[in-house]
Image (tube, rainbow, N blue to C red):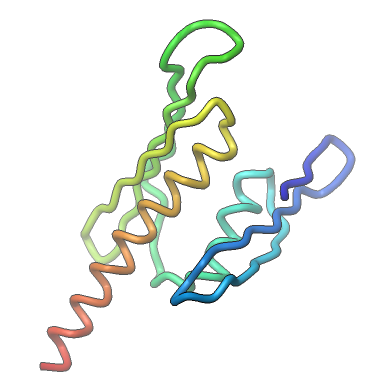
Length: 117
């Protein structure tokens, strides 16, 4: 659930399944996408990373156009890209971010596993 407007602070409540359990993150942000990404971070707790790029492209024309969102994150010199596609730009953005964060977390887990060995 995302709430946003000109006179209210953007808030997001996001539920994800992690390790078989449904977990909810709730956050405020500078806008609806920022709030959603922060709520996802509460759930996933990814390693420190930076946003390198966030792009939105229209796939077709008209009011039912699909939005193609690409999120690019970086961590320790590595880059992780996620894509999302939906008629709802917020949904596409959330899917793209989750895809990128999942790749980042998998890489961090692999690095940590190699350090333990």
